[in-house]
Length: 148
Image: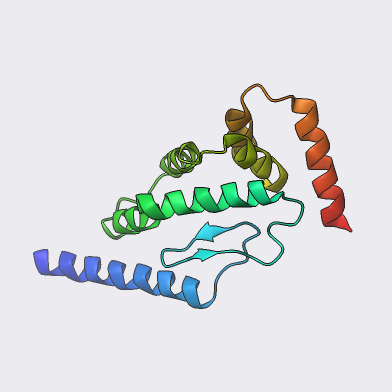
């Protein structure tokens, strides 16, 4: 019985290592920078519409993931049949946000780049009392440039 479980666990590890390697060789299409476990990937044109300060804040956010080892923690958990939940991935994003010194630049970058409610929540959290109308006009301008 134990031997069968070891074979199953070994197959599980081989499967996820193959998935990880295939993601490095044939990366999925990302619109925003991300850390894939080996390096930080910057898709072409990801910083269109961002100020240099905002782009630097995004880089610092990704470096926080590298320092914290988030990708490797998630991968190790997966190999132990304990995949990282969406809530934990969200906590990882918030902790990486908190390590960035220029919270305003990261918040406005997130607002411009965001495509989901969680990123918009993060932007509002980082910006605190920033005027929501300024954010909306900045987002409209970014979307207009993107559609051209």
